[in-house]
Length: 233
Figure 1 (cartoon, rainbow, N blue to C red):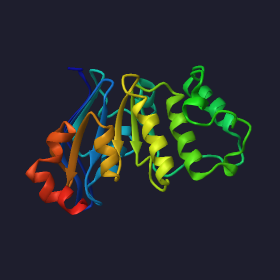
Figure 2: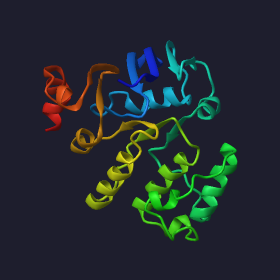
Figure 3: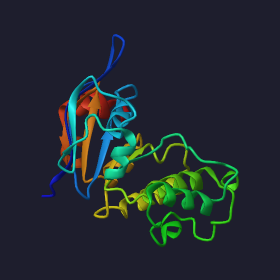
């Protein structure tokens, strides 16, 4: 069994009187694909923002690779290898694909891994401006930019959102290819894709994790069926 790369205990975030994450416990193991699912409003994106360092938590601890990063900045976490790829594409549309990768290399102070464009399905597209890419290609570039930083844990927030069936399958294949290279925490509403891709699944409902384990175990959990999958099916 792989060791826990990310350990979250009792994580809490509230905005005024609204508690969004409430005592979240979560572990992501080195090299695994771990999916986080749950209904809309469950707190998934807020939790990812807490893990990435964009939002501070009112309570709880976050340990990454053995170090307490609860109060570390977003940039400090990224330097340690905890990197987020954003749900909403944040690209410079007047720049080319190759220019984006060059900036990513400068930002992380390391050479961009060879063959990254080919792995992202963007081979031969380096000279193309981002505003000429399809939505699916932009999402693929977004993931490639995150991979350019050589993450140990990649946080993917709905990478298949807005993609067609074929683009979703291609994105799923790219995510699956990361297994063993880096850990992935995947938020995705496509339940079938999640259970096809993930080594383990955690279910967030009402700001708390109600179940976590292998896909088959989680899929048959009565609490998950009652709170989410019965509705999703």
